Length: 86
Image 1 (cartoon, one colour):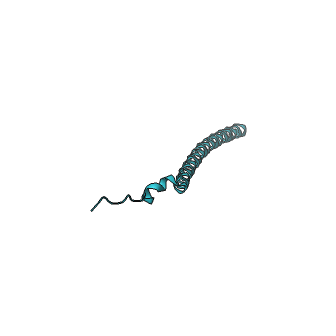
Image 2: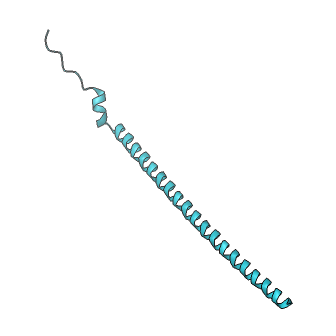
């Protein structure tokens, strides 16, 4: 028994040299980029929501201040009416 004849190269080994695998790699990169873009969009949306919440809190605070001022003005007017009636 002599030495076995040389085997042809295994197609699984030569596959990475073919263009198909490179296309898969590009698809993977695109998917990763798309996921990163989605994450950025989510982060931006979260930041926008936080900004809206802060603005709403400011508006509520301003409304409360305005209401307090109106109440004070109303009380002052009532006191003046009472003084005028006396």
